[in-house]
Image (cartoon, rainbow, N blue to C red; front, side, top):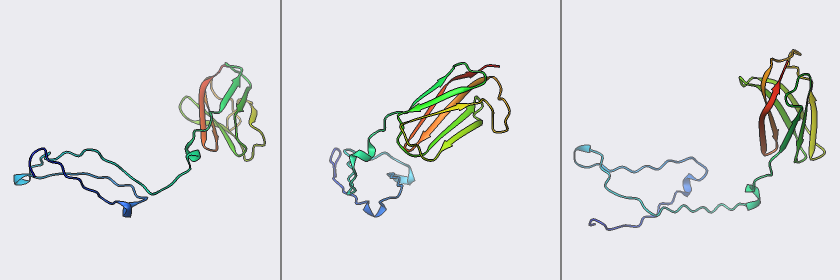
Length: 151
């Protein structure tokens, strides 16, 4: 094979289906020295797997509203755009520590609301500062970081 000639190879990797694989190519010249002696071009990957395109469509984002902002003794939280099913609401401080959680296993409407009485797990009032709301619903997670607690 001369310089500039190309050869076509097909490599069947179906036996590795479902596994994580990593392909690497190397060439050794005289005395075991690594040389870049070939080029790889026009790579095509084919699969026999079929899928429904609807499985991969993005769900609309959740809308999370909180008021007042800033807050002192109570924070009203509303989530809109939900599907029926479970919902998890977690509240974190600026250090990433979870200070409170609210959970419901079966929503019956597309909206959810709750009032946080601004107490942590131990029933204590957390420090003034920025708090993050994380809302988790089936196939969707939304985080907002625009709430501020004042003393």
